[in-house]
Image (tube, rainbow, N blue to C red):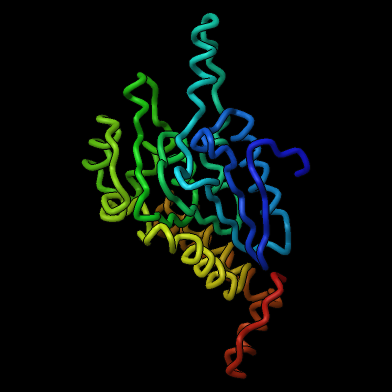
Length: 260
């Protein structure tokens, strides 16, 4: 991806980083930024050398404050606003890649920024993280988050947060199951890096198939989910990595996986 205006992409070993890079605007996202994030995730998903993806925000103030309201305000004040709906994959982009995606959340994580974090498989929050879905205050909808938050948090709590649009801190997000853990802001990057490395030590194909089972299976009756598991279980046992995993266990050594 050569032409990146709003994000940066870096790699460390088997980990690819997508960094939202508008710190002066609290990493607020214009449409092109959504497109760049989605394209960056797809690029890493197609890269055989990357096994885990991390999404984070530049600067020390925000993961992302959501969609760029200055651009929306400009549209409203220069004439009738023509709504151009985002494609679905703008919101569930983290779920559309096969590899695990970790959100490293610090500072403000609001509106579309929270939807981006919710589209990631794992969310690690700094203790200074502040969340909100304030769209109702502007008479618009927090659509994707409204669909996925009840899968993590109690329905009544989700209703309150979405209907009031109030802010809530990292500890409340953790209590509700919206984030996996809360760490001191100074430890956020190391915690995320260590987690990514821990995942990378596992069989990458098994990790990806596990994500597929979870995401596909949660929508299905148990028997249909088991059918998906059986299909994928047959495939994983045909891989070189599965053979390597068994040999490594027998030889009491770390496995050397190759994603094959």
